[in-house]
Image 1 (spheres, rainbow, N blue to C red):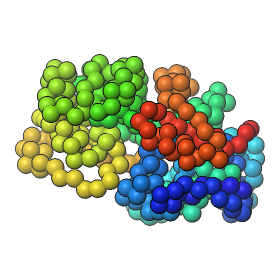
Image 2 (cartoon, helix red, strand yellow):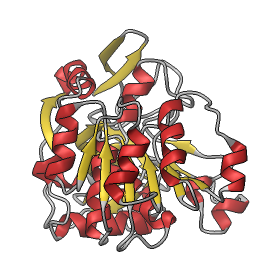
Image 3 (tube, rainbow, N blue to C red):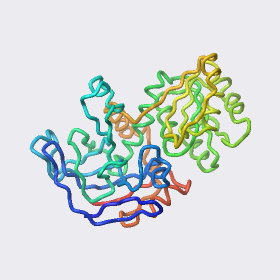
Image 4 (cartoon, rainbow, N blue to C red):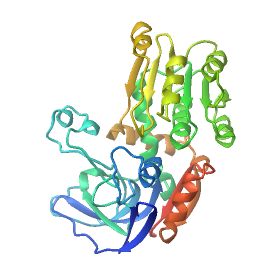
Amino acid sequence: MRRVVVYPGRIAVEAAEIPAPGPDEALVRTLVAGVCGSDLHAARGRHPFVPLPYRPGHEVVGVVESAGSGAGAATPGQRVIVEPDLPCWACKMCTSGRENLCENLQFFGCGYPQGGMADYFTLPARRLHPVPDVLDDQTAALIEPLSTPVHAVRLAGEVAGRAVAVLGAGTIGLFTLAVLRAHGAGKVVSTDPNPAKRGRAAALGADSTIDARTPDVASQVRHALGGSADIVFDCVAIQSSIDQAIAMADKGGTVMVVGVPAREVTVPLPVVQDHQIRSQGSATYLPEDYRDSADLLRRGAVRTADFVTATRPLAQVAEAFELASSGEHVKVLVTVGER
């Protein structure tokens, strides 16, 4: 079979043996895999938890080919989406229903021995979710990345009618905007340095869009919202965006850290304490977020055509990474097989 391996400075398609599923695993034939922002960070050596080389592909739709004797409901021929976080199921987090925070967490396609940008892979059957028949493969490939902002919005609390800022209009920022609109948020302002991305945010329902490089961007956001932001979703997670987020949420607001930081940042802790600003990290998702994501896609609250802007076959995976890095696309998919 073929599999993709990302090395420093290059992305290769290599030959490999088809893996055999263990007793609780399924062998899955890949149909489609998305290129994630985390993949781009990792390929540049900037992901804090994914060293090079690595085998990418965690936004994956496939078909079950075979299953081990203890693989439960995994049925050959069934179309599935991967939930790529691989918990231990024994630690405090796992036993309290927070397996996304597992103390021994592994992550398929991110530093794990296998990834979904391959003809086949094996995975514990309990990390596979059936794909509703009404969703085509490209739409199903959006369930995983959409689940990240679904989880973040849920953690933020009630958003209906509230004033919200979304920092960053890349894939996750745009998904966050779509989820906020689906949940009845009030005024929503989007910031990004890229004018094309700001245009996409406006098309998806942002009330205002502001250049993130503007020196007084926090003041402009507050003016557009008519006051401080009740909630700020930082989908960038760099020093400047954290500074802006805290200024926008001041006083009494919530800052949701959704983007993956490449390095440590500093925060004005006296302001956070004295002005009672809540800072909340948001890590991946849980099965209920997958269900909500699938429902948003099923009922058209999030539309595939707004997000999937390019596809490339597996043989052209390096070009797919280049397109995803260009700033001109939202979600780039790698097509691997056919149903």
